[in-house]
Image (cartoon, rainbow over all chains, first blue to last red; front, side, top):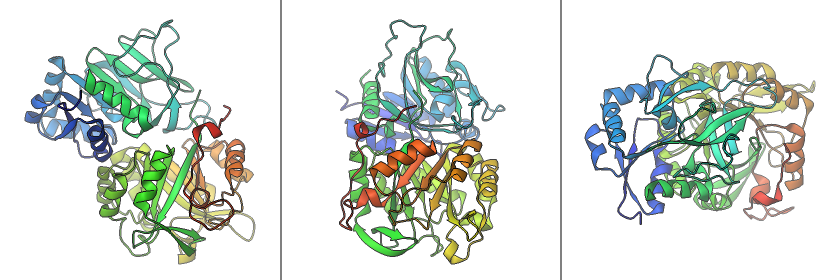
Length: 213
Length: 256
């Protein structure tokens, strides 16, 4: 079903493109590395990958005119997935570099993970953690990418999106002293804080779900 | 529910692209093909792989891109790569190949600023630092960037750890090099437990793991972010016969 899907993977110079490209190929879709704005219109799904620092990546988006092209792509109703730093880029801003602005497609602000008990909770939040639905939802709202399951996913982040009960869209959380957002969906905009391309077979399944939307 | 302690497979490669095992930097044993190992540990669902080119720094070069490209093509596991990394360009190259993290060590002895620059450019969660740790004649933990047997300067472990945390490393890996390949057990010294409690960043220990019981016990005692091992994952128990293995998810059930 995913044989003809073309996935655009945005290259802003620091992402871990190698692993992501390979997973997309294994799923049976094709990919195109997106470095210029005119490439975006031909892809069926767009992924903003996830290793790097907020500031240099924002500047790369500006220099390449990708910022407008990605926003236009999203506003046309196409499905976008941001992974880790890519998820942060979808938001309005990140404390990692307050002078830079994100794409603003998710009406949220990324903040630094601060913990009270440093003997127990370390920053960066690095390793395998589980996802769970917000307690306020008796029946977890079903997102396109992932339903609540017991498996763990690979995280590596110093910044994140704290959970607020008033949040629009659907989400799953992870715990790092406080609940933080691990998966978020806001209409056609999807963000994951972990690395699905590094999260064993169930991570691959998540990417497959995106491609199958 | 919280983060699980990572059980990290440490894989050493030499300048011939061979997977090897060493004992305190010497007594090399040829194990086989690192690419094959990459595929097998990925299929085992390893929490993370630490790939180190042990000849890179002594030969003044970076881990080769050719090796990395092949290695990454056969693994889905989160990957931390080290070996002779001495510039921002080296790090860009390694991340572009598909690694999540890089490990810095030898280069920091003469260019400590690299740590700060790397963290600023790529984010703290992308940067690890490896110390080679020894216990000196007075029983004190000493740490150095690069190999102590090659004349690199020894520092007080805690002082160096906090200096690196301050400079922006996202993780510190302590390689207990006197224990490497000896099966003498993972160090559960109280100094290490205290250091881990005081650091705000993740701490990983490497070296000396005896068996799966030792792995499990040390995780329970140390309460640290990760335990790395090599020999127990590449040799059949109590032999020098090569057998790649990794504890299944179900064999470890850690309490919070």
